[in-house]
Image (cartoon, rainbow, N blue to C red; front, top):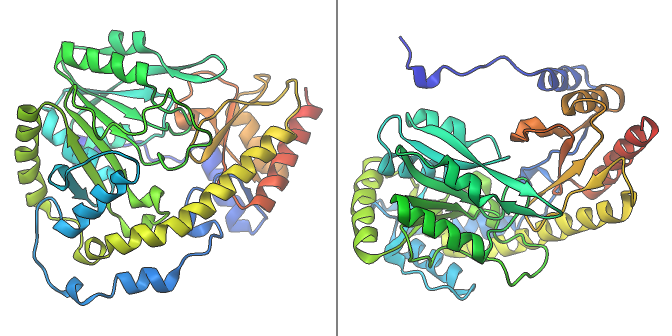
Length: 391
């Protein structure tokens, strides 16, 4: 009766089951995985946000497949503040970046084709690809004191069925930004194999330090067909309003054909609601106030980690350039899951074991830098004590 696309493993893993039981029992939890800004204790400019959604023009339905002009102009202005020219005509609004991926998989792939994605990574691509009857193949990120794209692994992963390379910049959870030399290499691979680039920049407003090696955005990449994704969920801390976008760039003829096809895909759904489109120019302004708070919290927690972790093992902090997460390198005397389970059961501290984010080797715990600072300090102290005492 049901599609094979929805045949997912639904049995909760051990850690998730224990978390559910602890919550149900009312036992305290020190949650170091908070990633929802609306639940992280930030002060939202409620009057501004609500007023932006209460404009009279929100009552009028005048659909445009790519989004109303005023909203696309606002996205163009967002890039202008970064010194990047993006024509509003190259912007497509979506109901979040997950829908953007779905549109692009539909645009680029036949059933059974594959997309290259980074590993480790946030476990979203597999579900989105499966719903589009697309396969996922991975390339590696490598760490040598900082994170890099393993370009050779990209080359090895390309097959005749490959249609696109996905890049996340800064990457979640490693915090790695795409570098100029990496983009040059990816452009060469994409040209050689007639591939598109899909670059997810949802965390791009959360860089920790300036680095001239970085690509600030691929929205102006014209070497190959490129789809740059972003949205207000992260940039403005407004995940509840579900508005993202795709910027299409590349050689004019290829870009034009992509836009024509995306227009039909978008027109089929017309999914972005009018009030949030009308509100977008004001939401960008209100979102600046939220973003500043998130930046402050993330930097505060990251600095605390750097100052608190011992100079030598058994526990250390992997280098990160941006985003909302930090990766702790821990002893492999136990599996990541065993460490995470022990922390939750014995101390009520909840963290992500590395395999939750497709780390292929043991020895990693992932924590959210968005966690309220007092909670973060308490939880990190517990982790340090427990791991240090046992190693």
